[in-house]
Length: 256
Image 1: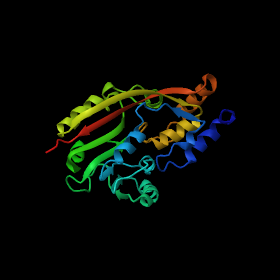
Image 2: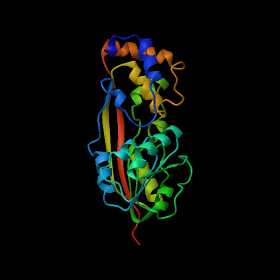
Image 3: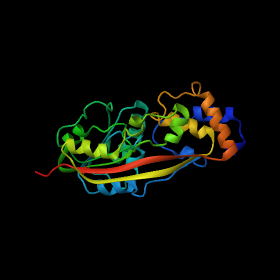
């Protein structure tokens, strides 16, 4: 059992395990996160089955896209981190999808009006003007995104209380306004607050290494005292509880 192991052993394990891709199976039995009621992967798959050309932005290791039962005749994905590009290519190429290495902040390397559907799960940042540009008239953007102050019980254990401007960076209403400013019509916007539990400090270390924007520049060495105090808290009180926030947004381009 993880709880019978030493602080040093747990931290070393969390620091050593690979963070490539977007597979969270390593956390089984060590951390849990409630899922949104809307079922993003299923809903994405339903939409992919009814279009002829689609793009998945910031696909990670391609795991979510690969879960779709049917891909359209033209399926492309972008990813900016080289290890994930290789992983996604190996996973998606047999399905007939092409993976394009593209920096997250760069313009999308596709022509205007190239896609019926653009999807993204947990993009670091959404470039609304680029999404609107590559969508055909009547095309759809469908995305699940990280909401405001997500897992901030954990973030603020390491960084201290964050300013309100930081806590509200990913406000869904700001996303709506940005989409509309780019000429898109928001047809669905839903929010969820979801329970997370971390059962040992190794799971915390792995999570912060994998989800790098939570505690930017996180290293075991820099945050050793915070890790040890959290380990002692978990041992004394049981799983550490935090709450993630998510929102689902669906937007369409006008038909001509």
